[in-house]
Length: 99
Image 1 (tube, helix red, strand yellow):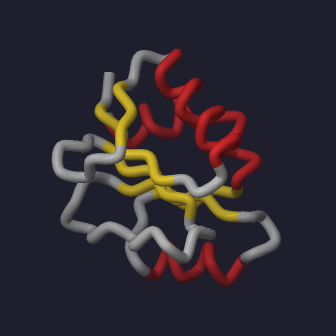
Image 2 (cartoon, one colour):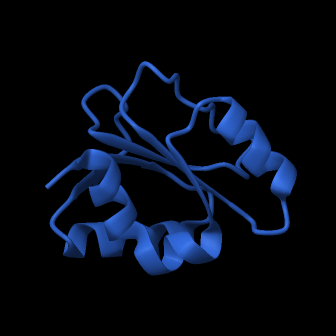
């Protein structure tokens, strides 16, 4: 089980991701301080991208927005995936980063 800080502006999608993570046994919240993994909606301009010194970072983006993907990779995100993959594999992706 990992402590996951989830930041997603889309309430419906965020609820779906949170549900998948909780079903897999992860504890989900917003607190970056004690998180084992940080999950960020990279398309949300209001959410600052956490520093690399924090927990491993998983970012997701719209598959048509390759510029955002490149920016996240350059910023040192540990894993950057399209939203569709996040939808299918949220728990497995978090488990991969939580190690």
